[in-house]
Length: 304
Image (cartoon, rainbow, N blue to C red; front, top):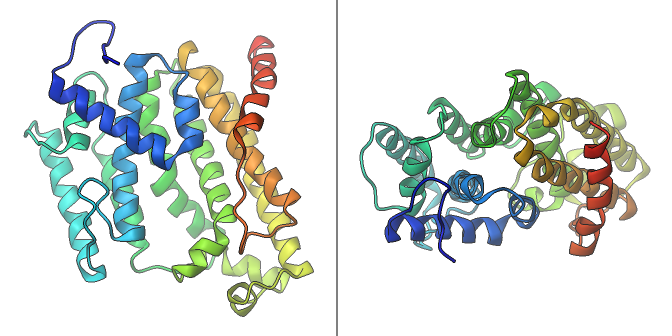
């Protein structure tokens, strides 16, 4: 399909770059991709560009792989690669041309959307921390990490969505934290394989759960109680974020409601799986995603 905004046509090279970003989004973020499909095209493809940038950086830190070239990067070269991306981003903001599809698309996005360079650089700091920090003592540490790797993404896309009140940005921060906490709870087992534990140590001690319990996949009553506590904390951030959605431009609200409710439903799936997050990944099948639409439409019609 030809990608055209309401006001301009794009070069074949730029169209190709945007479509590459779309494919990255479709491949790595099915829930986000499903929600973004409801955006008008002039907002949808800039959002794909932002997501593809974030995925590129996250994949470098987690998998030591460049998803554009497919090349593996040694662990000791990963931080160097992320620092290089910081320089590339600075050059893109300065107007220097690049043939990388993510940077080519991002440069086009920056022509019409005021996304502060501070935000993607903060994201790089967040994913870089995964290279050296594998334990979190307090929830405040987890919250700060979540802000850097998730909330800043929300702040970037808010500039694409458009908003009527600056308060929308505060609510976007809360939604980002809620979604990242959901990721953390869903991915306990996967993160253990990477040697990482994001559950706050203070909470683990409070509920009597040890690192050895996690490493050995002990699904004890204490672990379930810990998970119940963490799930309610994540839900509280979803609730806190809700007043921000009506502050977005009308054509952007429905996709964000979709993303918000789809992600929150993962928490319910974790519960229905008996809190088995060591060997079973909680996800929402497509028919359940579609099934949330009537509820969202009801909320929107009633002015929430």
